[in-house]
Image (tube, rainbow, N blue to C red):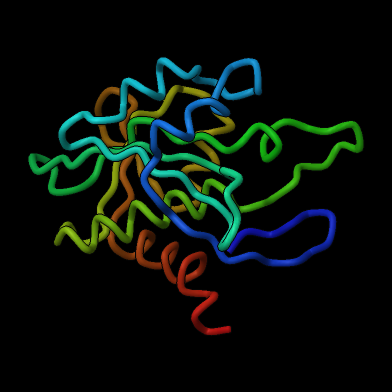
Length: 171
């Protein structure tokens, strides 16, 4: 569930494949880090899964995660994760629209990892940003002893799924 900062209301989320139709709004001009061409490059790649997150019963994209199946590490590898511009850029009043975008995206990939039999394992390559690294560690990622890679293992990953994706089922 994501939290609307202004009202404090929680919203259930849905995850669906990113489609060609979605690309018209995913532009640098609209504040996304990637432009339409970069997002399009992920569509149709074998073993690569671009997924959008929306509020339940809404069409507006709140975040996107792109991951690939990585059998050699027995997990899923996150290629890109990004919140919608309104969820990461400050507005005039200094507040973001929604909280917990990244947490829900990571939880979704953890859940997909479990469904594939990878015991919730996910990994990503850190960009070396100390603030992001601290955030990743807060979520439960651990650093690998080589080349800025980080992974999330069973206990932390399962907890993330329970807190963010199964919360709505408990009511």
